[in-house]
Amino acid sequence: MTSWYRRMTKVQRLTFWACWGGWAMDGMDVQIFAFVIPTLIALWGMTKPLAGLIGTAALATSAVGGVVSLVPAAVGFTSARFGLAPSIGAWAVGSYLFVFIGALFMPETRNKELETSI
Image 1: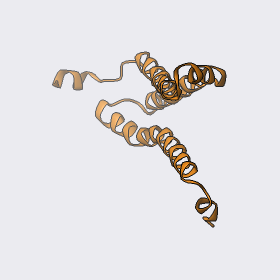
Image 2: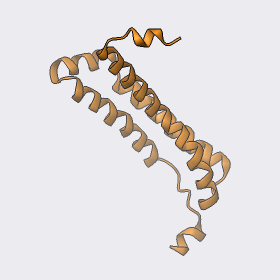
Image 3: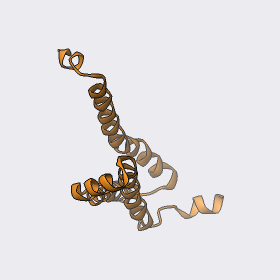
């Protein structure tokens, strides 16, 4: 079943694991939301619809950031001109920039009791 892996060269194996690692890191944010959202509901007293809106907005803006910054022509141009590492760095910064922008426009969710106890 894994004979395809044994037939790979060293460079192909490294490429495989780099792609797998990128895919795993991309899915990590969804898993983190599964743990963070219930905690926010309990600690901040937010409603479930608001928590759903926050999770949806974060994932949607992350997707927009990935699409905008991963236009194949732009990545090809930047990697040819500046190198592959800066192109991938720009992709990562662009993706998380949209997550940050989405977070800026989230409604205030902290309740009054929490603010007065701090």
